[in-house]
Length: 422
Image 1 (spheres, rainbow, N blue to C red):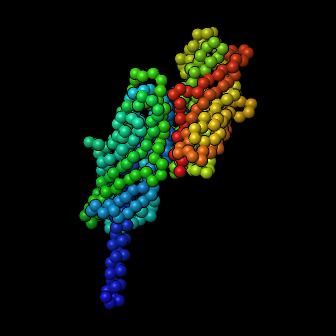
Image 2 (cartoon, rainbow, N blue to C red; image 1 turned 135 degrees about the horizontal axis):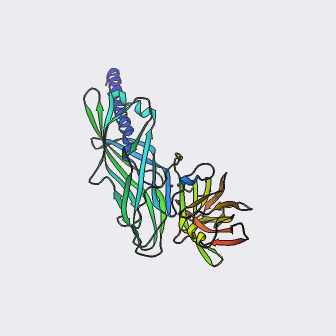
Image 3 (tube, rainbow, N blue to C red; image 1 turned 90 degrees about the horizontal axis):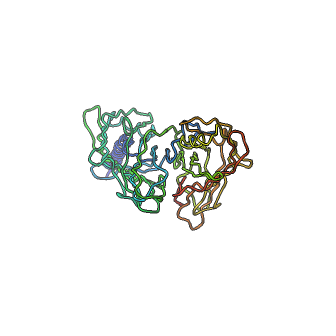
């Protein structure tokens, strides 16, 4: 081959590579529609009462690392690591054989400006996307995975591609999606996970031609979103939550941010009071072997449901106050085994009037944050889980003498996180 021919061949191969990269870049720019799953998120200080979900509800948002393979004519031409940003709602506990769903689901993915900068090479300015597979798994459940696009693909037409600008695309276009129902096992726990997404993308050029491409997306790190323990009485009604608050900042990659409101039964003298203890934090999704992890921007709230308020009023009480002295976190597969996140001296519960049929939500602390961690995975552990343990408080009603309140750990267990150790 002569030098001129070699140069032409090299240039041709370069044009081919640039063409494939441009096509792949444009495909990835619309791929956001193909990747959504569920889900765990609080402000930097005290939890606003309006952000705290009802007792027994887990609300959250996570950013999960994924990788997408782009294929043209059945041949893979490009791979892009990125993140999916998703939020949603789930119950904090399940009964044996209980049917449950993930609800209020929504999310998005943002692609960088360098990808959209490649699109004009082919004159591509719009795209249509059809998501045919969006699968969310639930371990030990029936079914073990649900494709929410099965039989009714998500279709988004005429997605605008602006060269040199980041592209953020969400799913669904309006409203939210639900995943389920699943049926829980009779015991153990259920781990919810993003399994897979598949999109058929048709790139459209201003020159009048179109280019069909497929995008196959899978988790590139741990894919566990949250874990729910199973226990208690059988025959519980289906759990599908609606109307829960979802107002969380965008988490970092491989991080969840959420609020869990766990049910507690607290003994006060001869009485049992049902309350909720909410915990919110930014939490890593993966634990690294040989290192530790902590919750950041952690805070909480004491929730006294209207039914408990009415019970206290029925006993003649008009106000409540006191001090929370302990909220223990329990660690499986790591150390310390238990950590009390309430600082020395406790957290004050200000004097609060009791009003019939009105719930009380007291931020803990009233300002600032709590320290939770560091937690260190055991050397042989495959996962490290942190759950809510026992709690304690000194309570006073109507400004009288204090009485000790002791609260056993929720049963079944309420997990804050169950991280794979890598």
